[in-house]
Amino acid sequence: MFHSFHAGHCSAEGLAEIAAYIGPELRRLNRAPTHTLAGITMPASMTAAAASDHVWISCPNTSAPQSCWPAFFVRADGVTIGRLRRNVTGVLVSTVDTEAALYDSTAVWRSRAIAGTLHSGRLVTDPRSEDRTCL
Image (cartoon, rainbow, N blue to C red; front, side, top):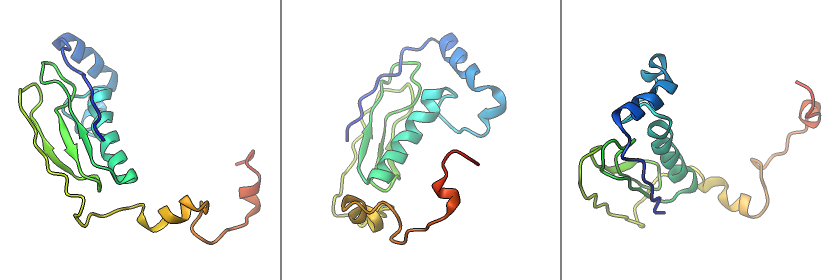
């Protein structure tokens, strides 16, 4: 999957403004190239999508300052295998090895889900599960 995106040309003031939305108290919990929603959520979303859908993802971005994250490449198990530096011109070359034995978190249930079985194989009946309007 190629996920083209452009999150660059932010002014330093604009970047500071959208970083203020996150707040300084949460910066230590969110390691990101920038403390913006895009800087936090885009890499996390691409990593999660690669791992949960078992697809390789190229996530380019502009090298123009200020960009919210650097371009990166994620293999199908959710591991980032290449990353450029933010705001620095570069070319990222990554190898897609479709024969690599990568962890696939969805392999054990994918065929059942495709066949229509959307549970672990053993249905549980419980009155609390039947009534979806109470806690």
